[in-house]
Length: 230
Image 1 (tube, rainbow, N blue to C red):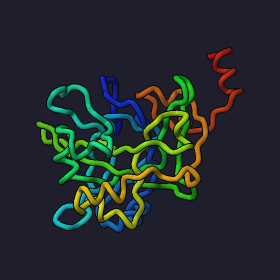
Image 2: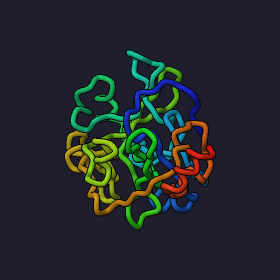
Image 3: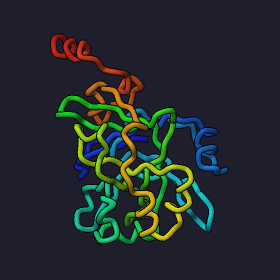
Image 4: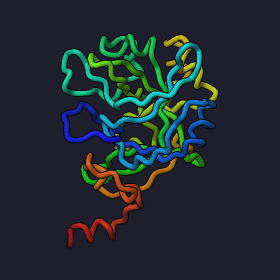
């Protein structure tokens, strides 16, 4: 389940991971749909990922491609939507009003300078959930984008935006509540003291690399060895 070489409009959080068993995902969302075990260590735009939507009043699993293709440039998917303008932008306002989703992840990456990616997680959580919005493209395929807010202090030295993190009590509101209320309640910067980060190998920047060692801690010694022998 992975995207490959392409042109994208993704200026932040364009790498994520999801390492989870079927029962973990069912428990997280209180859902009976048949998930698969997922081991996606370096999800990139156009990767197919499991997301949860509301259909006929019930939570339902769908696999969707990361990145929404706008009509004005259908070759370049948009990966993120700013919460502050989500109900104003023509590309997203209908989907944000009527089609929101929950995106489970194990973590996501941001870059400090060009060659220093960091991996961000929520403390004491193997999985957490990002706010998304979804649509279908002209071919009938499902696509989603991640909703963003200003960064917290932990992320700010890498980028000034971060994904909206939705906690369990707000799952139903995000999926099926009034859009303005859902944004007002959910679209807040997640506290820095509830997150952690560590540096990872620059190979996560390669959209074709999906091995587990992409998320291993990466030290200055590793960096030196790569420069000397890489």
